[in-house]
Every structure is written in structure tokens, then in C-alpha cells.
Length: 332
Ligand code: AMP
Ligand code: TRP
Image (cartoon, rainbow, N blue to C red):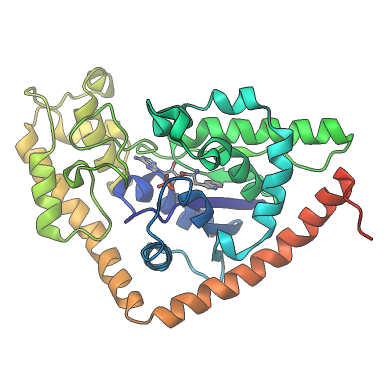
């Protein structure tokens, strides 16, 4: 059975993008894989996080992941800072990865923006920690959204270089699982920008805890173009906003984009947005309700995370200890 690893940052409320691009696929993979899912608080602090909010957001994200259908008995669910192996292996990878590799990462360039001198060093080495997250478990399949593809290629480069430099075949290759018609959900205000938890405009995204009226209103206001929907997927080219909404519909309904257009080709956006709102509310409202129910008992969430961390450490500690031995650290 292949081992799955994936992570999500507790830097805000999870969005529809996180759900369709990642968490929904995590749920499906539980049936035939050994799954390890991580709330990556160490990644979150690569940009400023209020220390009063971070633990709350970590717990809320864990609750939301469970509400989406992750079963913490079958899968391992924990938060990154609770398992030391991540930081230990990340340091070794800081010394394996090349400066030039990291300098090419588009996410670093986007997040650092114009003021690169003032970005944290952690933001720069972020992909090394991500490689450590996965490889500390010898995980081989990683379900993520499209935006993480380049980071996973880098993780493979790190694994290969480690194996080569130390003359071993220790870290396995990693396969990116980028699944479904909504692997890249775009902002509701700008079809060329990714939907993100950290976008300053709340109107740009659907949060997993938005109430039905908010969802309907955000969709009604979502940017579109003046044309009716096309009848074929090719007709969505150069229409990023239309493509985004149709992709979201397809993912939520478990259909192909072509199926959706067979039904809605020729329809105007007001009709399509109404149908989309109805579908989205039907899918998301139960998740929001279950998250609220779980958060009424924070001690249970914390116990789940503690138990998950113990199970995770039992897998990662021996692997990282072996990596340290291969590097030549003296165990006196
Ligand atoms: P993050 O919120 O950056 O920690 O992302 C957690 C997971 O959600 C990763 O697998 C991302 O690729 C995925 N993800 C985040 N935003 C989107 C989006 N707009 N569309 C699709 N997947 C996304
Ligand atoms: N970098 C990922 C993101 O922001 C989150 C992440 C951290 C991750 N470690 C990971 C995803 C390991 C997959 C595997 O989306």
C-alpha cells in the first residue's frame, strides 16, 4: 500500500480552493492508501502570524479537515510543530538543495513580491521543509493543487541529490496527485489569480465557514463576462472567469466540464450562478455545521492531534535517524 502525505497551512480559514484542490481528494484516498495529513504551522510562520491566533487557527483547521471527511482513526492527522523530525530533516535538506533551485521557485517570487530583501529566510527555504515533510515518512504520493507542482519537482530533486551525494537509494521518488476539474480554483474577482486564504478581499473567495447567504451573494457578485456559456469546453479558452465557475460546478457535482456544458451551454450567468450557489450551499453547509459542532469540544480535537503526532513520530523518527546516520552525524 502506498503512503500518502499532504499538508495545509493554518494561515486562515480554508477556502473552496483548499477543499476542491486538496482536502476532497485526501478524503477519497483514505479508502486505498495509508494517509498522513498535516496542519503545517511551521510553514505558516514563514510569513507573520499572530501568536494568539495561530493555535486557534491550527485547531480550527484540524476540525474543518475532519468535518470534510478525514477520519482520524484511519488517517493520521497532526500538526507539524509537534513532530520534531520535520525540522531535523529540513536542516539536512537546507544543505542539500541549491540556492539557485530555490531562487527559481515562483511561489517565493510571488509571496516575497517587490520587497524580497525583507522576506524571511524561512520563506526562501520553505520548499526544503515541504520536501522534509514528505520524505520523513518515505511517502510516495502527494495530493495537492496545481500551485504546488513546482515544489514537488524540487522535492524530487532534493531526494535524488541526497541519494547521489551519499551514494544510497534511501529516499523514494514522489508522485504529485493533481486531481479533478478544480485543481486550480481562481479568485472570484479575477480569473487569472488563484483563490487564496490570504487575499485581502474576502469577496475573492468562498470560505468553508461562509453561511448560505454569503455564498449566494459572493457568487452573484463574482466577475464574469457578457457572453452566455459555451456548449463545449474549448469555448472556455480565454474566458478565465467562466472556466473557473464551470470547473467549480463540475468538481462539486462530480461531473466533467463537458457534462456541465451539455446542460448549461447557452445559459446566461445569472441562471448558472443560481444553480452553482444551490449546489455549493448543499455541499458546504454540512461541512460548516460539522466544524462548528466539533469546535464546541476543543479538548477532543487536541487529543486527536496529540494522538496523530505520536503515530506520525513513530514513522518519521527512525527514517530521519537513518538520514542523520547517512550524513555522518556522530552518535556517541
Ligand atoms: P495552502 O492553503 O497554501 O496551505 O494550500 C493547501 C492545499 O490546498 C495545497 O494542496 C494547495 O495546492 C491547495 N490549494 C490552495 N489554494 C488552491 C486553489 N485556489 N485551487 C486549488 N487548490 C488550492
Ligand atoms: N506548501 C503547501 C501549500 O501551501 C503545504 C504543504 C506543506 C504541503 N508541506 C507539504 C503539501 C507537504 C503537500 C506535502 O499548499
